[in-house]
Figure 1: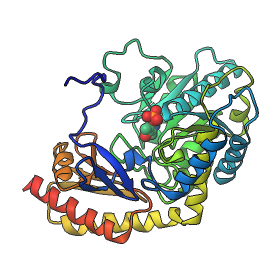
Figure 2: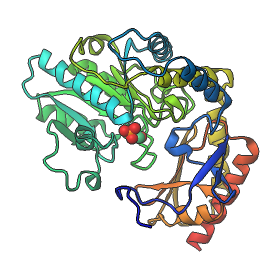
Figure 3: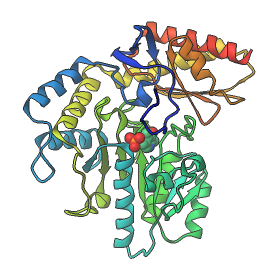
Figure 4: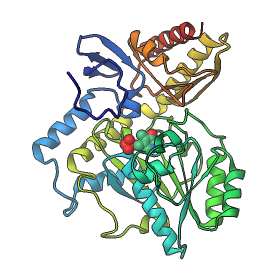
Length: 390
Ligand SMILES: *Cc1c(COP(=O)(O)O)cnc(C)c1O
């Protein structure tokens, strides 16, 4: 039968119908170990009882009203997110791209408030910010932009992890009002910048009165061993975006702002029909409570080290391994050659992984992964890599 879905995804030949923690079962009752979490969405694993309970209970009462009315759960979630992040206020969206759209709108309006006629935002090579027109224009990947010209203007691209490149761009362009980046690049290949990179960007933003805008959509929610990846540094951004793991699979995104950035969007200047509805907020509140109750963020550092060290030990003799990088449970294994094929080879061994940026194996296992599952992941993946590179 022909599919009536638009062919926007190159889907793998497997269909899951049930999950439990880090396990997934397909429609033939075959079990798989999930080392991707739906791309860092199901950070608490599949079918977590706390999330299940929260959304069941909320759906019995009320799913959606409208942002025309008050919303107690949105208020509670905003209280908790600002307390945990050091930010001042929050706009809720339904996805990552929409959270970044809000950030981009804040930067533009902030620029106009400063009298800048055509406000521009510095963005990075190899970045990923989403698939809407503005966010794909901000994204540093020509494949994602291919066919969609004219792109949204007002983005100035520089190399990632290169402070001199930012300084140069600032010299050349007086219209720059913000710098937008991922604290760790996800789609771009798990690129972890120098430890002082974010601090140096903070200094530049203060000096030039720019908004520092961090896309934490993949790196946030405990993934890297801090609630937000920027908390590895002693800094605060002006804007920070979340989505992916915020609802553990229930769609919700957030744009957090601080100081002058928190005062830019006013009544009527932005909005969303679904954004922050009661069902989505109930899921996100349960996610925050569970992260806290199960002490999952601290454990992410140990678990990431166990996986990184385990892989390094098994693969140290393999000349095809270029580098193994990890910050908490954001893990990349870079090969010297393209390795997209590894995804199918691992699937055949009932292990779910991803390859991004052509030659980087990306692992984003759920934060609840246990010691036995970590051993199975390390064993299966190193065997698969050895077979692929032999
Ligand atoms: C996934 C992702 C996005 C886009 O989120 P969507 O929910 O797919 O719109 C943006 N930025 C980063 C860093 C991401 O990983």
